[in-house]
Image 1 (cartoon, rainbow over the protein chains, first blue to last red):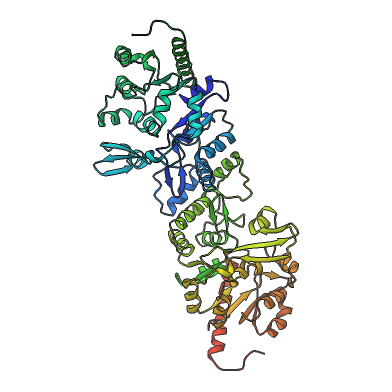
Image 2: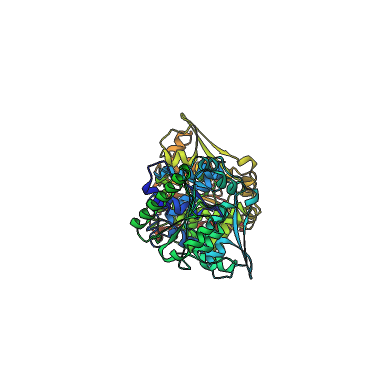
Length: 308
Length: 308
């Protein structure tokens, strides 16, 4: 989705606020999987075959770490490693994660602002029958197979909204909540103190795209996790989860029947193809979402009959 | 030389005390080139074409660091990087450099004790007309081309002899000073407070092999540096440099004419082929040096005419 928006908008217009609840410290290196995935995707470097890392990366370093008897369940490629080494180094010199991300993204020629949700470490933890697991342990090492009994965004309460995120929201013409996992990728962002209030008080319309199509997550454990934590694993369930935050909600054609119920939540709706399988479909969805946002702005500007 | 001794001696007998004055911090990673070269050499992993690193290493991480506009004058391979990442991590957990080196060497199956000269950071600095240079800046970045005006082993005065090095010297049957650069590789070791006294008070004979053959260094800037710093760039100059420390000195056949003058310094001598170009010649020199040491021990044990 971020890729589609990046392609549609003029350079320098897009700001992407990214979850860092998935971050981990691996052998002393700070790994920020979501920041990196966004960065690599916009730089055209992202792996096309796996959900993380750099295309055609090698694993010579990891092989050697295994020779040193280091458990290498977190598969870091040699090129990817450069990002973690450099980020860790820059953070150690006193740079904030925001400035560090800017420096990396700028070196890769990215003409969008990629902002971590905050500068302080926030760590998503998953409560299971085996105890509370670190997110990457739950997600990568154990393949998200454990039944989740609860989620916690450790450190979120002490985290602060950065001036960069605050300014981005204040100056935004439109806020898009991408079709990511609502509990693992979006909720950590919303858990930063001040984030929700900032989003609800901005005049820019806030639109979300459902990550659930026909009761199934397009990718990852979103549906499973929503169900386990007592949510409804449908587009409607996602719309309900974001209640109070959204002006508009985008559903897939497959879920057109839910449109009325989503409207009843006070959200304008758009029904379209939301499955992004190709570059083309990513751009098309982004175009439609931007057009939807413009409609919402126009509706507000012109006093007229409000949608039921 | 270390490789030759390792091949000649039974497993677990050899202890190698290694210079760490060449260590550097590169992007927050602790790199110990001499420890690594010894470790890789004994593990059969060392590069055969360059004087450092791992054979057939790739440079994907370094290429990506360059993409991030990081000056990559210190050529670290992907496999080599695993050592630096792991060492840095282990040190950060509070492990000493000695224990950390043991853990790495043991994982690689090395059956010799590789000991850093100390646990504290000591950094060799080279005084030049351009100012005082960090060792790796002088050596790698600037190719040892500057005229050296002085050397300093920064931090050596505050460093301590480790209990492991002390014990190794106390229990040694023989001490061999390998044909390394006397000023850059051996002198930093000797500069650790207590090291010299420990070596001169041990009953084990101390033997050095000349790194200078026919007035030329076999490898590296040893001859140039000796000259620049007012030493004689000959085997005799090296023997003089180690005066007071040695019981025996090994000269190349090419320098046989210097034997008398070396003996005048109070050092027993052995003249042999010292150029090590193949595995075979490394082992042969090691065998001869060990035999020379045994002769020196025998001479001491049996009261008889001492050499002139």
